[in-house]
Image 1 (cartoon, rainbow, N blue to C red):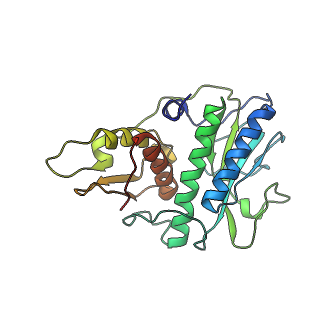
Image 2: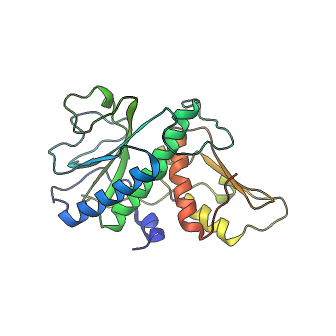
Length: 246
């Protein structure tokens, strides 16, 4: 399964079976986590085989069942994480540049891991754990200044996912007036439209400028900067083009 096929196959699955994840699959995921941590400066951590990997914590949206395996997306909002701060934002929930960079970086590398898990035959779902920072006896560790931003549940899904929903491509991007959309930009946008976003809001907008550069910004919506990071990863991976970001 290539990345485009994984984007099409990935769905938010919140119910999992008790079937263990094979050791070689766990090893492949850990290797990808190590690479992502090295590239990003994040402190992503994984646990497997727990009775309840969410530690009894409630999730911000959606009900989960049978979550035995989870990846915690952890980082610091002090500028030490690599990331993007695009043209501005309409996301009132995140205005600090360090927090914006953290959320976008978590989206980018978290989605990279979600697609890797999909390629390995697993189901996944993004989740926000309420009160994760005050959890008793957590399986993750936090260095000073770090926070757990999102988590990824993964395992063998107990049910299939639903259809992907999307706004029209014209609502999610802008190209120079009078020009046709280049094939590479369209491929990137079609992939970005498959990226996971909270409540399928797709709070992002990409712009192709006359000089061939591309900019992307978060628009108004829940967890918009995490969603933007997911969409940017999809766009880059599918465009088949070296994107010159503005």
